[in-house]
Length: 226
Image 1: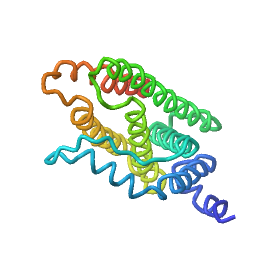
Image 2 (image 1 turned 30 degrees about the vertical axis):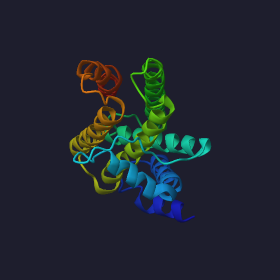
Image 3 (image 1 turned 180 degrees about the vertical axis):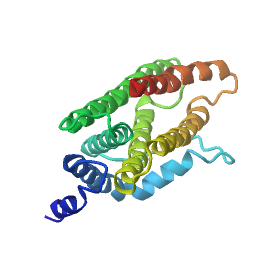
Image 4 (image 1 turned 90 degrees about the vertical axis):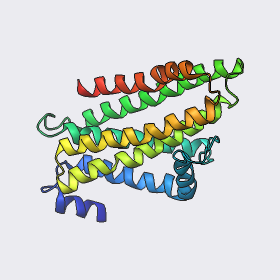
């Protein structure tokens, strides 16, 4: 009842319809359920991505069960969908088709996650068998799921600012780019410190980044702008 009342009070003032706002509220609640119980583990894992002065060559991520990981991925995909919707909705989506567009963004986020997991599992598995890596592919997959969940939590700030505080879409897009840069810096550092420890693997490291990090991001950017 409280949720319905809030939607009725603010629906005429907010930059989104009732179903979109309800999806936003559900996503926030889902994030609280999935992230809050492991908040300290997430904080420690995130801080380990930026310990540049003291090399941290361990891959850290919160330990959780299969169902909890599914909820994390679901929450992150919803956050990404809401962010994309908030950046593209103004005057571009016909009335009555908002949820259809939100579903499209959600499917895109889910496919992006699955693509990255497949790439990591395949390439890292080959390199692990050849002895180039000492880290099992499953550990990096767990780390990436954690990173994906943090992306979702950070991305959720953008629709919050746009829906409730009327932040211009251009500023929201700039904030999204800053979040991507911030997180990718940590991921690249962990790749170099935890996987590519050998100083003579510079060229291999560059090719790895192009194939598994930069190319998927570029593809996502192209798909988003269409």
